Image (cartoon, rainbow, N blue to C red):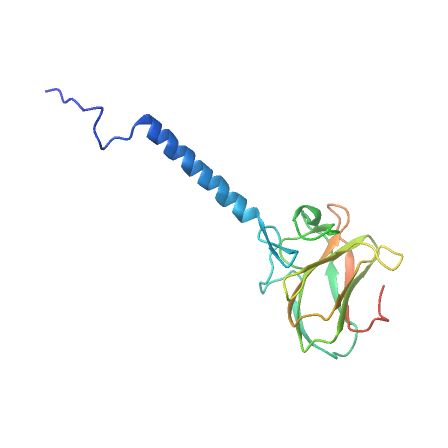
Length: 189
């Protein structure tokens, strides 16, 4: 016995509808991927939605809580710079450069803020700083004070979490560094 099928059956989608449906699904997939890589802007400062992990609780070299007026000042932490992500391609802020890891190298939770906060790194090589502050703003620096050590100054720093990356200016380079956090303008590399 032979069974015939009706090619114009309403349950079967026509080739043009299938093609349109596939095209629509592909467009939605591309849009979703673009959205996942996009950056959101708040008050002119970009916050990366992909690439660098911000606002989490894990970091490469730990975390520390500081209160305004902390002692000893500066607070220091040993860090090894470098990573496989190029900060200049992450859509962060002008001047962001160096190679960093996905998660921050160090996290500072800053309470009862003073009117000034400075981060700087000291190393026997060319390092960079990439910082996402408690308000979600990006701060970056490569060289400062006439040398290869980076410095980031924040006036009227907000209370909260600071995600900090000490980058290496060159790819595939890891440099032993000391991260310094200070409220004293006289402290710098």
